[in-house]
Amino acid sequence: DEISQIIRRPASLAALEFEPHPTTAEHTLADTLRDEALADTEALPLLEHVLNRLYQAQLPRADGRLTFADYEDICGADVAPKTHVKTCRGVGGALGKHAEDIFTGQNLKPTETPPPWTAAHISAVFRCLVTFGKGEGDTDVPNRRAFTYRDLIQSDPAAQALVDTFIHKRLLIADTDAQSRPIVRLSHEALLTRWPRLANWLETAPVRDLMS
Image (tube, rainbow, N blue to C red):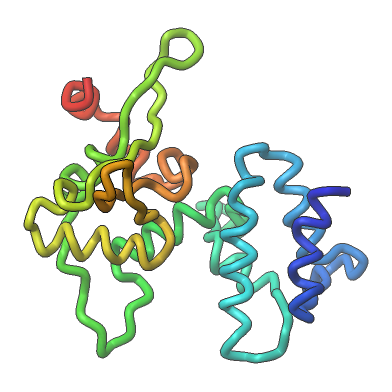
């Protein structure tokens, strides 16, 4: 089917193989990705992100294997409090975990400098990159919007570091507008709902007031 081709063809062209499931050999990681994309229509645009992260994860090993261990690390997992059973968050969780890891400096090397930004920069930066429209039942629905780079960073070095880092990590997109001014926008609309830190901030009443 088409989704399977979206998943398998790039891997095949790059001579990569998907790891078989630990308990069901005929079911590979490619099948897991396909099943998740079919079950969650919002997950389909995120497949490219997950596949790219899986590719990057195997580079240090140089074994050409896209593994379940890397997949769980990329997507994150929830642990049941009583049974301690881990459940992978899947394709939909990958983007949010990626954003949170970058924002908190989770994957920094010991020699790297911690991020200069704070939680307050969520408001300073993302209030400019989000607007609200009306959804079903007259509910407020967040949507991404472009904003000029200069006005976005507001001569704040920490804000500039956050924006530049998110651009480098492909969570934000740098472009130019009709007047050739540098602009920035979210790379994925799904970031508004799949990154818990941002989604929780968007739920607050003051945000609605600021963006009204």
